[in-house]
Amino acid sequence: MEQKVDIQICLGSSCFSRGNKLLVKVIEQYLNENNLRHLVHFHGAHCFSSCDKGPLMHINGKEYQELDEEKVLAVLNELFGQTFPNM
Ligand code: FES
Image (cartoon, rainbow, N blue to C red; front, top):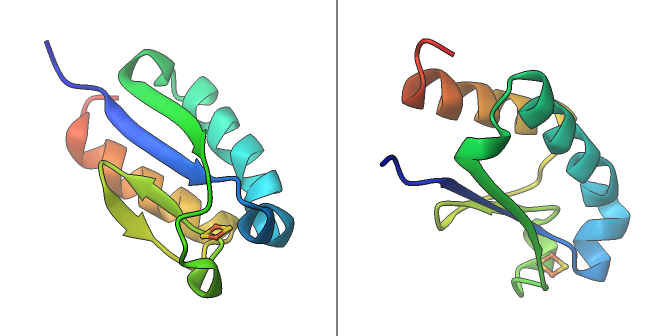
């Protein structure tokens, strides 16, 4: 069975107030619209201690920094386009 993609979004106060509050919704919506929920473990995380580079998230342990909506969507498109080409 394929391993789930692990998406951890930082919900520490800095990242949360600087954009992740919205990005949680953006990611949720993306997963729902593309029917990806069952393939992903999406969860919030405590501060990663890199607040100056936030807002940020980790996907399968890799850190993505200085996120905004456009950047998150680009990362997700690239990731899922490659992992699930027939999506
Ligand atoms: S609040 Fe996100 S890294 Fe600190």
